[in-house]
Amino acid sequence: HVGNETPISDLPSIWDDVPDARDYLESHDFVEMESEEIQDKAKELGAGNPGFWTAVRKIAQWINTYIVYAYNLRQKEYRGALETLRSRRGTCSDFVHLFLALARNLNIPCRAMVGLHRVGRSWETHSWAEVYDPEYEWTPLDVVSQPTNLTLGSDYIGISAGYNCAVRFYAYYRAEEESLPVKLDFKQYYVIGNRTVEIEFFDSSL
Image 1 (cartoon, rainbow, N blue to C red):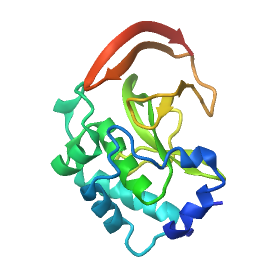
Image 2 (cartoon, one colour):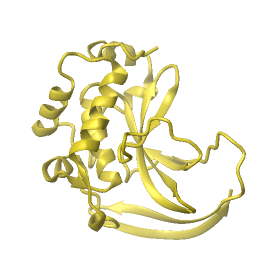
Image 3 (spheres, rainbow, N blue to C red):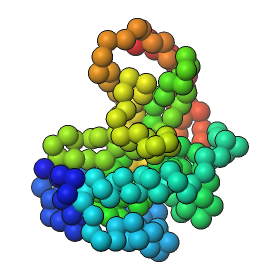
């Protein structure tokens, strides 16, 4: 078990026996772990060898405090962790990519979630992160919300998960409680180079 007080220096040996976690410790498109700027910021946030969940909260709170949500960048191309760190501006997917790059540099396995978030009576496309704890497995957190939301409930519907917001491996819906049927309209996209291409359109009732 990775407890709140498990120091991040002990994490590499813990993940040796957890293949699901090891897969989410590497650099990928839009998650530029190898960047010196990203590594320097990760070292700063990991100073003092904090516990696992303490480090997670420090990273999320730093992003929440110093990165500004930019509405004019919505529906634009993914910008990646490094550009988000440099500009201090981004959308939910940019927040997530920066969180992934910083957390993975501290040996914290994490992945990107893409789905829907209920705002009032409407559902909006949204991205958030999940970190891996061997006891609780994939645990979500929304780094855009203020304060950082570590207890996502029925206002979130996870549609797909992957190494970043662009590469998605599977889709699912999970609800913790009974709810009214939800009708969803989906568009499937692929990212080819720097272009987002719509492939198909379908709808589903949950």
